[in-house]
Image (tube, rainbow, N blue to C red; front, top):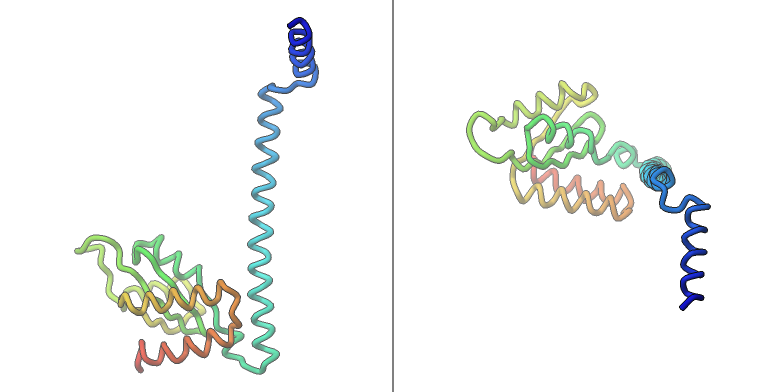
Length: 174
């Protein structure tokens, strides 16, 4: 029993001498973890951005200018949600044209906006966009989610563009 007591006393003395259990060290460790997490998040964001740029270069190399200009527009979608125009939104841009699928905000009445109002908001917030097509159709939104998944899975931009173009011609007839 005395051997156990001596070991326990030695362990306590070691912890006190090295500063284990002090709040300062715990805060430093938490800050280090938070900093490492932030750096990892930045690295992931940079990798995704580089992958998008690489896909654009592939489209350019293949001689398909449309594939180069086609992209998912997170900025437009998140702006519509933040501004209260949509509960959820997905947007794709090809050149100066935006294609937007939204799920309308909850509740009816004065909060509801027309497609024309949504289009004008997008053009005002994003001056490079000259034409906006908006759909509140749940089937269109589901199809846009499929395109979004295809891009997230790393499918070639040109393949997604071809499928998107065919679908858009049916969804938004001129």
